[in-house]
Length: 104
Image 1: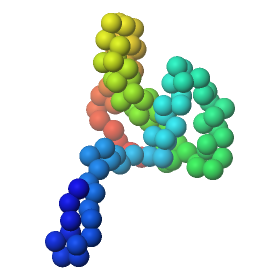
Image 2 (image 1 turned 120 degrees about the vertical axis):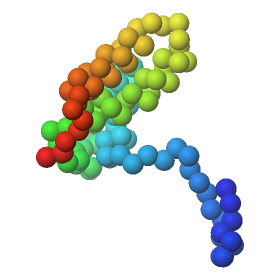
Image 3 (image 1 turned 135 degrees about the vertical axis):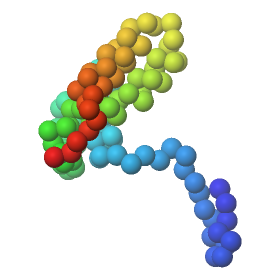
């Protein structure tokens, strides 16, 4: 936090900001352990349409769940399957976008 030197107004810096598609809000709900399921995301998208490009939707969900998976893997480091699942997910994205992402 700080104070604007000119106006005296308070300033708050958020170190956890992210620039992403609106799907980042629903990505974690697609993770099986949360048991929300795709019915939940379909309801969400009735009010907030899938972001463009729609054909990348599933990949964006996969990408946006990596943070949660990393946290789970580090918090439960004795569970090898957490890391294995995370590595598979990352590898799938790396393989698919090995030349980088090129929007249409």
